[in-house]
Length: 168
Image 1 (cartoon, rainbow, N blue to C red):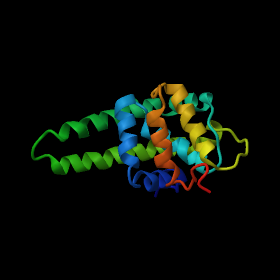
Image 2 (tube, rainbow, N blue to C red):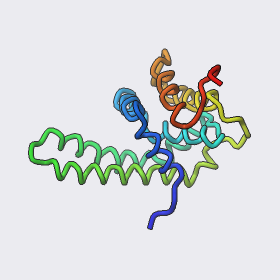
Image 3 (cartoon, rainbow, N blue to C red):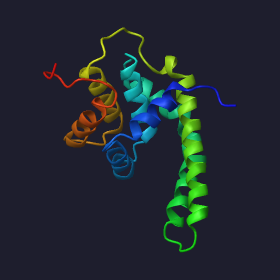
């Protein structure tokens, strides 16, 4: 029996919200930014924790082998199966396996989150979500003009219960 993982539960809840999966997958496919790292940053903001660049580096190191050796090969197989007729059942089985592998990555991040985030108390607000996501952007340099980043912040802010500045 798997232990409860609030990061996994948060990620499942957020990922299913309108527009979230689309932008997360776009960022992952376009810029090679791991969806789980973005969800990790959003979850940390939701529990009032901030990320520094060194935290992102440590998180990346922590999950890099798992992502490269397990998740990415499974994802590649799943995507290949989309192009093969009569492979729908196998595709669904591989998709479940990929989700299980993603859950394991989130477990690794969750079990180490205290070491991977600042314990400086801060009020939960748009700025903390924005701060964490801008830290990822600063580390990865995926969105030079920050248009996609601002869209991501806007889409994630509502599902995690963060009011947009000035709307309170």
